[in-house]
Image: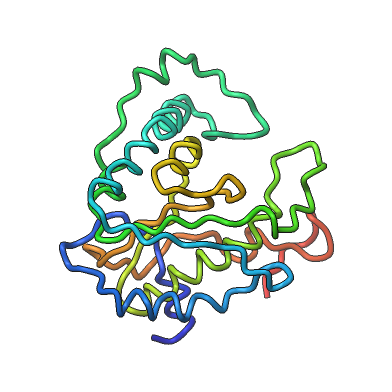
Length: 221
C-alpha cells in the first residue's frame, strides 16, 4: 500500500475474524515497526506476544474496572479519567455501571494481544517535575506502538491501542512477569478486522493547527 493510504485508513479495529495472525506476518510487522524513533535511540520498549487464551482473558478482565469508571463518567457528560477536572460521579454509580461485552471481547477474542512496556530506567521524563500528569516519556514508546498498527494495516491486519488495564498495572505485571522498572504503555489486540474502514472522521487541519501561537491564525494551507 502507499504510505498515505496506510496513514488515512489505519483505524481502531476491535472486531476480528477467526483468521490467524501467523508468526511470519507478525515478524514482518515488528521488523518494520522497530525503526520508530526513541529518545537517545535507547530503545527501551519491550513487547510481549500473548496468544494464550487464558492470559488474554485475564488481561481483558483487568481492564473492566477502568472501563466501568470510563462509561459511568461518559454517561454523566464528563471527559473520562480526566486529570484536570475531578469526577462528580459517585462511586456507587461507577460500581453499578455495566460494561458491554465488547470491552472484553476485543482483547479476549483477538488472535494475538501485544503488551508493550517501556523501561523507565532509560526514558527521559522531562516533565516529571511539572505539576501535571507526565506524558513526555511516552515519546520513547508510542511511536513504536503506532508503527506496529501502520505495519499491521499494510499487511491487511488491524488492531487498536487499549489502556484500560493499565489502571491495574501491578496485576498486569504479575500476570506477565513484567519487571517493576517497566511501565505498561499499551495492550494491543491484533487480527484480521471484520470490516475495513476507508473514510475516517477526523478534524480538518485548520481545526487544530495554528500559526505562531496557540490562538494564532488557523493553518489552512
